[in-house]
Amino acid sequence: MRRLKSGERSRVWADGDRIIKQVVGDQVAFEREVTALRLAEHTGVVPRVLDVDHEKRTVVLERLRSDPFGEDWVIAYARGLARLHMATGPEHAGLLPRQVVPDPVPFLRFVRAMEVEIGGAEEELVLEDSGKFDLLHGDPCPGNDMYSPRGARFVDFEGAALGDGLTEVVYLRIGFPTCATVSETPRELREAAEQAYFEERGFTAGLEDACVRWFVSGDALVQRAERDGTDHLARVVDEDWFWYSTTARGRLMFRARVVATFTETHPEMSALAARLLDRMGQVWQPQPIDTRRTHVS
Image (cartoon, rainbow, N blue to C red; front, side):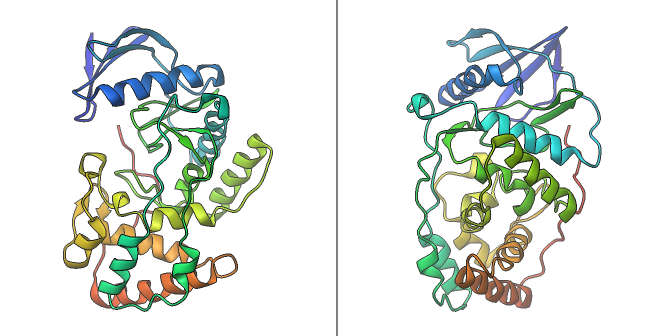
């Protein structure tokens, strides 16, 4: 077997047409991944589970084909996410954790600490569980996706949950909020990808609420190992830190710029984002956001 590059949370080997993955020290994450893979097996967008050793937190998976991705990879990505999200429904309640709804209170404290007026935005920040039962990847980031003539397929489901799929298709609009790499998808490609997602699912919906949820989430400023209850929005007032491709302040300013455009659907939140963006531009010097996807091996 050949050892492959992987994150700190897992060890991965290749053995012919199989992948062997061992999750390190986190039984809950391991069980979430195996459960999600089995729930999504019929969709064709995940590797098949060939064998499982629960005691050793090890799973044997089908080895997926991985071709170089083109400039329009986001369209296949969005279609793949749609198929994944449709894998589950209310009948699967309890098999995976519910998606976490961000608490807006730390964000409002952050706004005050930045000496920015909240205005009427607080009334638009009533964030609730959507009640949906879509199968969420939990971390649909560059590096966790693979491409072939069959389209996009996904790996690494340790953060899988049940919830609202719109919060993942907006990764293309809000800049991949849980990912090491942040990039801004060109507007024409992003709109084509969002259209492909809704065509696949058979309905349309606004994506602004989902973007706002990522904007106010402090956990979306740090990698998964650091999402431990720390108030990262309080931290970012006084300090900045790099996470792979840019800084926490760079991420936050990009998200503010996106939300500031929601003048028709979220006028108060849009105005607040614009005020915050102006204030952050006065006191911070953030790193720029990539305009093309950064390759992650």
